[in-house]
Image 1 (tube, rainbow over the protein chains, first blue to last red):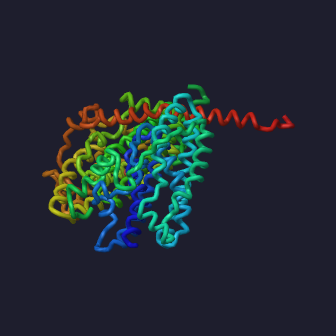
Image 2: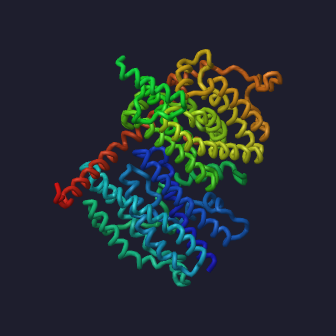
Image 3: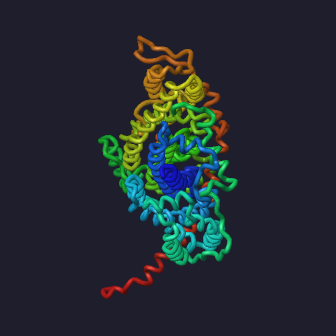
Length: 250
Length: 322
Ligand SMILES: [Fe+2]
Ligand SMILES: [Fe+2]
């Protein structure tokens, strides 16, 4: 039970960590000061959530584990985030679509997690919902703005949706730890979120005059720790200090 | 000059004398407007170019706590840029024009940001020294004569002092750490000390337009006075954490009640000001890239807003009284 709970928490946390890390790469390079500040805000929220989850998981793990051990000292195969969040920032269309596709899921997920039997997780979810509501509003507005902006922006957005849609299915596939936690009344029933997700995402995509691509083939693996080739570089960057200077206080 | 203009000028000068703020709608001499556009935009550019060297370490910050703090700090600098561009815009210039000046090299920004951040300790050194020097320069501006600039400075100064403490705390942590960490801190101080000293600008003897700036309260103290304050403030802080300022001439002068210090390498100063520092090209290239790549996004946002406004106008009920 404890092993599965820890694994479950890490899975949730890793999504926020890796997406927060990705967004933080953009700080100072956004298309306008306003969007730069807004994306940094989202990154800060996600990293804040990550810390809450990791602090909880570290406590469960015991043996003086810290949030930073979990963030920086695991091997690539031990990170459990979905493939979607590790996708590169690309152009602003890719950044926004990645965010939008994750936010829609994230919000539905937290709304269920808020009612779970684990009071700590429920509390973190409760606190995060307010933030993620704002994220989803922000990314949805940009999807509409860019989808229905100029011909050029419309085209770029459609390319981004076509590129990233294939990663959405994985968000709803239950891992063993997720299934076990669901049985305990803690884990979210991911399959049950699918219909709402489809509906909410489609509505906005349609309003943005864009289309969700037809696809028969999906990508998965991140949640099992089998990542894209991107992931090693994210970790090389993120873990650099902890690996180069082990066991120090910063 | 017509009688009307003479009256306006007298009214303006009286306001400055009485410490009444000049507001965007007030009349002001053309030279006042131009000088303020130049200074405020230069300041705004420094904030956003300054995001780059520190942003360089966000993805590699050693702990989650440090990552979040650094990210928030760099974001604060973006906010400072935003207030300052807005203040400059009140003087009748657009943000696009200001960016154009930065990108073409016509507008300057603080030279300190043309140095590379090569280790994590540089993040501590920048907060401690660069934000520290910035505060000394900026505190006097909270009282400057142009209202929007003065108000922007009040908000900014509060955050800068927070940055300064945060940077110093990073250095302190390193100094309390392993030998390797302490060396990293000392090395960062060695590299950032002189560029920080240069932040106050040329010596008073070399400095142009100081008298005019004093009158308009763009300056209250001279470059050399400010530099002295910086040395006197920073030396004891370095001592406290066991770091050595890389200046063999630095010593307490009992008679003056101040520190004496060594000569700045003015050749290096001018080299960097003129665009030949270690990172001048990279910094501008990064800004130009972000701006160019963002063009389609800004265009789309504009087009969308126009479409929305048209839609709204079309659905607006026709007023009966019209
Ligand atoms: Fe600043
Ligand atoms: Fe600052």
